[in-house]
Length: 271
Figure 1 (cartoon, rainbow, N blue to C red):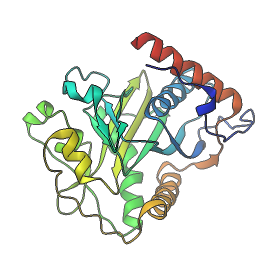
Figure 2 (figure 1 turned 135 degrees about the vertical axis):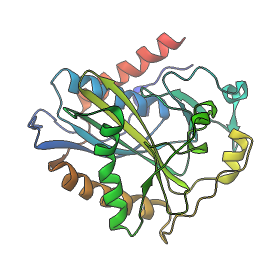
Figure 3 (figure 1 turned 180 degrees about the horizontal axis):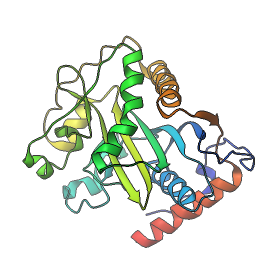
Figure 4 (figure 1 turned 45 degrees about the vertical axis):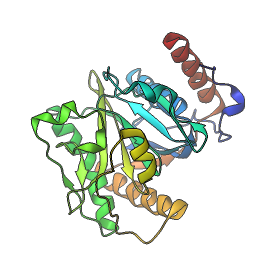
């Protein structure tokens, strides 16, 4: 696998040295589109920085530069043909998430990510504390969401969107809108999830070998317009639900270099 080069870095820069570390202020990283391996490294780096007390809690939203399958950290089995999968004459990237769960196909979706600490209760309680901003944000757009439920056999399905557990959010008709996953390191939690907006049924069938589950999002907007109104609604909901000020700060040049080094390190370890 080729190493990630600086020419691939997005252009956003900032000086983050004045970023407040108070729990009442969270960092909001602007919407970013990039490759899967870079997005996962950013999440991993932000988690490590918060663990070390060098970075406040953070919220960010991102999209994927090309069709990508992200595998759960502990996922050991997936179809062999995924290793050489292509779509529209381009390779489908296959990456490992730092969080658990099953395979997620990223195309026509929006991903959210939260790093925070100090949440109490069991794992599902933490999911629900974080997911409240998703429920509130979508409600402001006229969409009601509910937690899913899945039988014991869900774990045998390699596809995250093939079932909906109590950590997932579904529409009124039962179709899954948001699948989330977590990584815990002590009292620090990284939670991120995929929000289906405009899934490609053909690509889904190509990857999973079956028709996608029914999905009908009651929104008139499409493309960037849809992404922007969702990000705006969820950002406002997050500030309200978490009771914090969101301070928007792009990643600085120094931060990009540290993330780049992490990408290269991850790829060297994977061979």
